[in-house]
Amino acid sequence: MERAFKISLKITVIYILVGAVWILFSDELLAYLVQDVRTIKLVSISKGWFFVAATGLMLYFLVRRHMLLLIRSETAVRERNRELARTEEELRRQIVEQQKTEAKLHGANQRLRTLFHTSPLAIVALDPGGRVTQWNKAAQSLFGWTAEEIKGSPYPLLPEWSLEEQRQFMEKTLRGEVSNDIQVRRKKKNGELLDVSLSIAPTRDADGAVTGIMAILADITERRKAEEASQASKQLYVELVDSIDGIVWELDYKTFCFTFVSKRAEELLGYPAEEWLKSSSFWQDHLHPADRDGTVRLCLAASDQGKNHELVYRFLAANGDYVWLRDIVTVSTEKGHVAKLRGVMFDITTQKIAAEALLASEERYRSLNAELEKRVMERTAQLEEANRELESFSYSVSHDLRAPLRHIEGFSQLLLEDYGKQLDEEGQSHLLRLKRASQRMSQLIDDLLELSRVTRSELNCQATNLSRMAHLVLLELGQSQPERKVKWEIAEDVMADGDARLLRVVMENLLGNAWKYTARNEEAIIEFGSYMDRGAAIYYVRDNGAGFDMKYADKLFAPFQRLHRTEEFEGTGIGLATVKRIVGRHGGRIWAESAPEAGATFYFTLSGVGE
Image 1 (cartoon, rainbow, N blue to C red):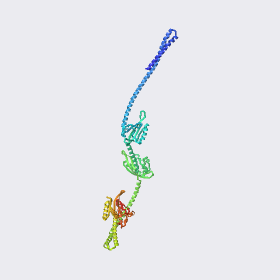
Image 2 (image 1 turned 60 degrees about the horizontal axis):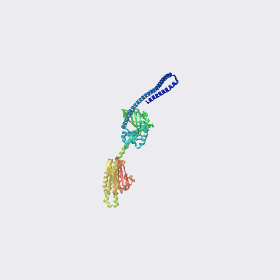
Image 3 (image 1 turned 180 degrees about the horizontal axis):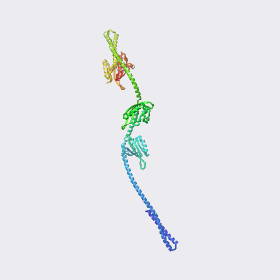
Image 4 (image 1 turned 90 degrees about the vertical axis):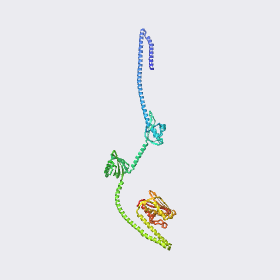
């Protein structure tokens, strides 16, 4: 509007100025140039029309010019209006699109929020300083802290030893890097450590600038345990396979190629595993020519029927020798068809050689055994004859020697009774010595007969209570010398497996010796008991009597060997020899420990098995 006013004012001013100039100067010029009144009148009329035409033309061009400007301006305005309308329409469309986008973003945010809170995985958002800004329910369930407890606090899940590791994660993520499925350990509120899989990524604003960190944590403790158990199981399987003293193998039945052989294959036969696996005819090619056809045929026939089987054959080793193998084969089927063969090859070369040697030795053994049986029969006959002769001799000794001894003892006793007063002291001494010698000779005969019976008699082994037996023997000894004071210490219920009659002889001899060699002690002590050593029972008889020097211990169990004079302690020297023979017949042994005037301990064992 202002511009139109200015244009109108401009045109009016120009018109006034041009008119004023024309009026002022045209009349003066006309009067100066023209003197005739009539001409002046005509010129004045012409001047008026000229002025009208000039001003009209001027107005035409001025108006035309401004009209053109106005038309251009109007056209520009209309074009601008159209542009504005298009812009307005575009803005309206963009607003609608933005509203739709905002609605979608709102929906997406709602879904993300729902996903965040309902996700089974722990999700944690941190600001660049490492403080918690978001904490979902899964994180609460997994680690124990509630969102109210944790928001705005430093990240609490880090064990002390992982602080540097977390700092490096933060630096990488704030630089825009993403890390996936990192296996780390994180701490619960109660201090328990968990194995977790960590995925961590930066969060950005609308301009793409990193504003924080988003971490997703999955509890893999059970999976880790399962993996460790699986790894341990695999390791155990490998160790078991490697510990087997044979070649563990697997073969694809369709291709007849080995798919696995244990390292024992190279140790035993010299071929590395790769060589076993590369050829489908490796096994057949290395079989002994004499074994090949039969072994392959047997293997295929049994495998086709799905039967586990065992093969024995010779196999060519890398060093050129043939090794005897026993191959135990298991057939594995899939969908009713044979899929794989698995087995273990054992080196039986040594057994084969031993078996061949055994066959040869068995023949020699049979020959030697026949000869030995013949010799045993001959020796048995000789032994039976010797036993009969010994028995006859024993009877002869018992019968023929006892009669003169009884006569000598009887006449000695009669002389002492009837003529003792007529003899001087020396004569009486000679008669007493003669009597005692005959008694000692009679006892010696009895002991020799007992030793002979011990050797010849058949064992009748049974459970025997040695404690009760020792008690009875000591009672009898006490009754024979009631004036003596002897302390007994007998362990309760000491049992042995043996011939009760012969074990009685052992106890009588050992306890009798203990009774005899403690005769000089005012307070005699005799013990009987047993103890276990390396799973075997050891029995003992101990006394605090005279004892003996251990340098003579090797003579102790020999017949007729005595370590004390007869004047000191009576005896024939046969008792301990008899004990040793009885113990030996029971598969045991006997020994002694002693020192002079320090008592003696006799130990013996019984295997419970007779000769």
